[in-house]
Length: 178
Image (cartoon, rainbow, N blue to C red; front, side):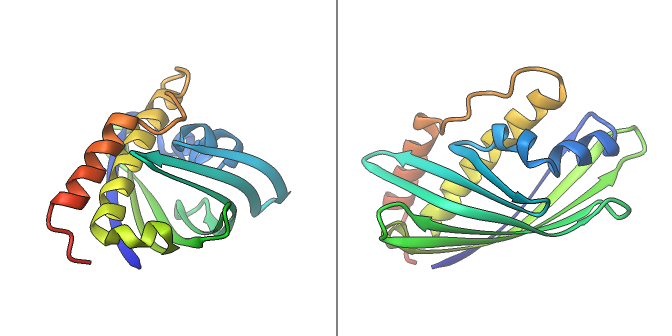
């Protein structure tokens, strides 16, 4: 099961600061709900874990994130993520491109496109639920990232259970035809 997601957001910080934080795995992992960094393999490869729980469903992935491109001149990054279900019942793959643009007022526009492929237990829920859950996780990430840039503690790194349950109900009863 594959889904495509394109999202964008604006932050009230200069592009250099946003770029430095967004391309630093040790900093950005604290903003990603359910994620932890377990090992720095080299300057472009990082091992970690992602744990998701929504309703009765729990999923945990051991993964590898690879920076395929980090171009500070154009403020473009390309990542590939591979994850194996901790229970051996599937895997996930993500290809992400992020592009930053500076606005005239000193703000930074962040645009991200992701192709996500999931096999195994989570794939049974279909692309609508995966998209809804991905949107919820992304929105929580954006809030945490903005807090971090503002010098606040990044918000709770765990998944917001209420938001996840809403996404699950919407995906299951919203006419999911995937």
